[in-house]
Image (cartoon, rainbow, N blue to C red; front, side, top):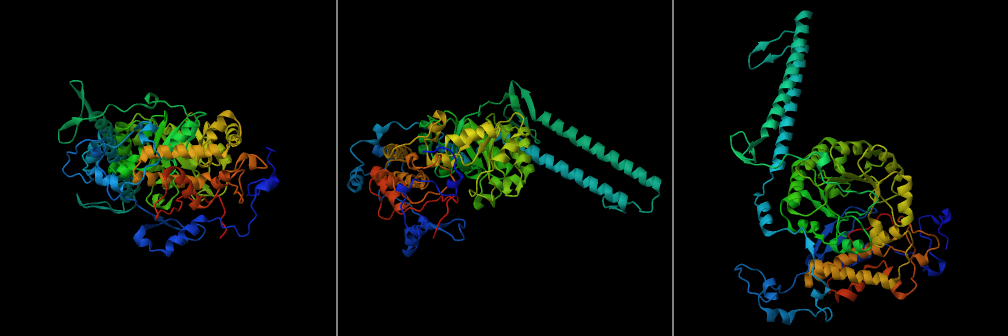
Length: 606
């Protein structure tokens, strides 16, 4: 087997040994179209709601999102043998009636024998109540937002004063307040004196504004009986936070040469992160959470922040477009959850986020972005990191202009994905541009991201492109053992039995996380199939003519070395459901799966 790169084999198709290739004509690779065509023949309005996503290959795909509910949902206290004392409990308390209609158990082993679930960062009822009723206090954020508003107000006054001064020089202006008329027919001596007065008055106004701003800032904090109090315009006082920490006083985290699992929407859930930790991932990050949803106390959004005890270095990623939301979100996360860093999403390309001003849309508004990052650093001692793309359009990169500013705004680490928003995931990541941006950074760590699917890719980028580390995203979805490969510097020819054990472990972790009732099992099944939409793209090392596998190469239809390996390589979503039934029992008769993520890096023939 030749491990060198042969240009003849690098034509966009993975170089699989001829004896394993299945020769078929007109292979339809778009499994989404087949699954969708079956759904559209039925009355989808009765079976679920239709969600329309962005146009892909000039056609829309319709994805049926089905919600599973139990006929009877047993109260938790009744299930553990306790009496429920809540009068308005909406769950069922008849244990015998529940047992009569309950589905058969998955084997003869109780889920509790799998281990006690050790998760952190849950949303408490009291905190949810405070957030929903707008009763949660944000003392640090309120001070910063007030400062921003005052700063903007003073800048507008200065601009208005300068504009008025220019009008007084060039033309006749009537001051409505004092009814003073300055004639344009003044001589040169009068004009020069007016300009001098304008300059003096403007300078005095700026000095006055700066002095007043410093005076206001110094007057914010007053010490009394060793307590820190805030004095407002009405003479009232309330507790305030400590004086903001300087950059050198903040918590330090070393990102250099660490294997960083990227925040992955939908598929980067807690059970998947546990799998990656077992294979050697050093840093993990939760799925992207929307700042406004967190501030509203949405349970589903806070669930994205949960952390397993095995995640020793864990961060959360938030997305938003307004300083008041992002700053408040940073403060509440700092107060309420255990987290090592907070990542700001500047790379999300989807229209839903971009059109609202979040994700990559912030790359065009460095003023707003600066207020967000400075404010987040001011209200928390947790390191703030960012993940961004090269820019919005392919031919107009902006990362080389923004990354130096991040260091001034107090960002602890930046990760640059070598694609623009326009590219999404098409074409290859531009690592030459990442290398160029690395020369604009002084002390802030810069990580690269894009197209790493093996240890050779990892070490090549580390050596050539002057970066401090690499964030791994799709590579971990296709082969989660990539972290072990990188640390051991070898190509791991994993067997089909070992891969099946990984899936079994994922299902166990899923039932621990989402629950072992009907809803939890179907939730686990759905995320299992979402992961399989990436996992099936892995090509076993023993089947390749040339190593390593490239992430942009689409595999031809092939068979494995045994039946199980062939099944794991199937692109048919019905086969993924069959795989889930090996661990989760038979799927509900109405369960049909259409993957949410379809990578554009693979060409589809229809």
